Image (tube, rainbow over the protein chains, first blue to last red):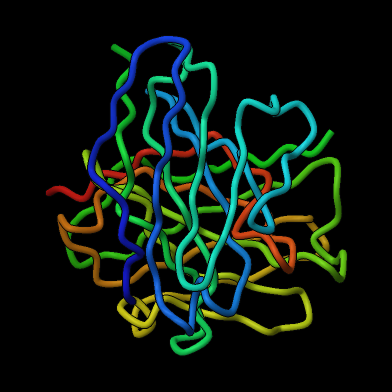
Length: 110
Length: 119
């Protein structure tokens, strides 16, 4: 099962904006919707973005998503220390007929 | 409110079968628009999808685990389960059950249960 490509880590200061990329191929991101998850230490994954750019109820609009071709991006504006977490992208792969995830990105709020 | 709760042994011996159950409350496992999934996260590593099942019997598995995995749904108990055979230390992970709408990898997750494979 292939893995989507994410940067291992990103960092920014409180109040700033950060972007996390997720790169795939024509059979996964290029064809299917992308979901984004936040995993805080000791907690279950939380859905932040679904269908590329939609937010579930309760997720602030500081979190936003986009997709272009075979890549997707999660943006976080107005960074807070509480945003320090690991972030994962995921999608369906139409070739292997299964779900694939990115390797995860650790966000540090300096 | 939808809740998912994993249950099962926290310790499994090498070569044995890991068995977990996910109890669903607040929704029915027979809802046509949802699959029900198992996803795991080994310590210090990323998320790995194990497989997803629909109550109709349609099931998809991770190709790297397919020979060892069975996911089944018990509609009478509103539960679904995971069986992973011939486990090794590499199967040590936190195992999550989750609900999977058709266009979302997973929207609701259980809290996860840590399963350690050790003699």
